[in-house]
Image 1: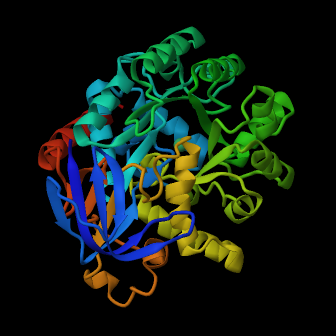
Image 2: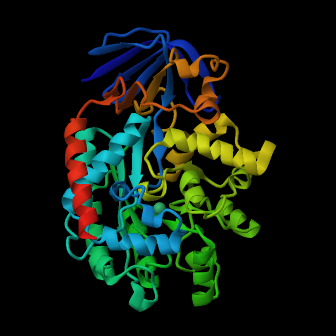
Image 3: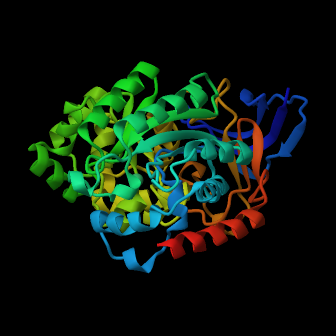
Length: 452
Ligand SMILES: [Zn+2]
């Protein structure tokens, strides 16, 4: 039995149903589950003095492409929008191999954790024909070593240029290959039980890189196995033109025709929805992973988050892939999203605290989880803490709930705790050697870029 006590925390931002902020209180975690939040003191294996810290529920990332950590900040794609940007990058990504997936996942997840993230969903959809390998297995290996809660996806692309899609032949697979590997991964890894550390999502990449039959068969398989489904949707007007010209349907109508709406579905981006489509998302509880930095960088547009929140569409936060971000920091996403919607929607924009709720409870809902996203007795021991004495926080103590969105926070957090285990301490990863990862990852980045 493992017991962790964090004593006398200056402020606990619980993000519970009553939006409580508890001052000078303790959090006691036993075997990964919060047993007590309040004034009582218990014996523990480790006791952390929380008297100078603000504590928050761990942030939950609902859309990423960790492999893109190795193709960031490339000058040749700096000024491109999504379609030409993807076409240029496929030529690099087709050189990915298993070692690169290992170290890019380690790097991206490490960065996320150092910035308060405790659960990550990764949308991996590139399986190069040169090395399709056991890429998702590798990601679970990384997750268990570094100590994060991972929802991995069996992503896929099946429609290449010759069939009217965007990607080259070198990165697509057949429907049969994809479904067989999906079944293998669900049977091997998917754990639906409370406090699960490993889940599988089925995630064909997008309407312009996946065939209709793969979309349909994926949804059927997922529902028969009880796993969730995810894809990119309504990211750009190019995509809208694609489905209109090919099917005479707007993107959401196209996906609806394939069985892709419902509370087990969430889409990345969701920018170009009209009023009726937003109502359909709300009625069916189909969710949206909001990726403000990526949407700004690729000039994709501004998601209608204020309207979605008003209608009750489930919304979570995400960094998107590292090539369109170009990082893995949800705290930065909180601030950029807050400022973007303030600029665009003024007093209708989400508040600073609304943004935190989107990144915690909102994100948990997209992943289908009720055991994470807030700090309450009976929930998972997933949290992070920052030092209230930091110079950058002087004068901000009026509202700890809003610090990340309104003020920003530009350094690693002091503690990240996942499943009751300290995985970041004083800003450093606990379970892995950061210098070693950095050295090997840089070698592999050189190797990937040279191949292209
Ligand atoms: Zn994406």
